[in-house]
Length: 67
Image (cartoon, rainbow, N blue to C red):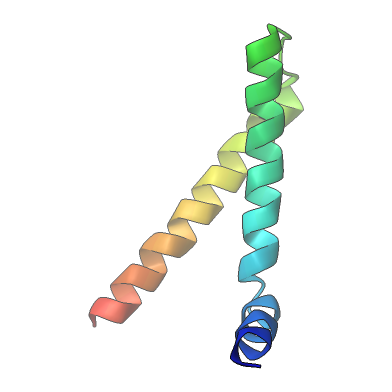
């Protein structure tokens, strides 16, 4: 029961959604890189935006916990 409550809480905060989007974009980029396929500029931009947002959120949450 506690797992379900935690899952719903994280889903409401969209932490799970952010993680899935980050993993999907990064995995796509890595697969394309591994296959030797040139990544479109749009995907490169998306990778940078997603990484910046993801790590920015993590950094902000760590700072908030430290206060």
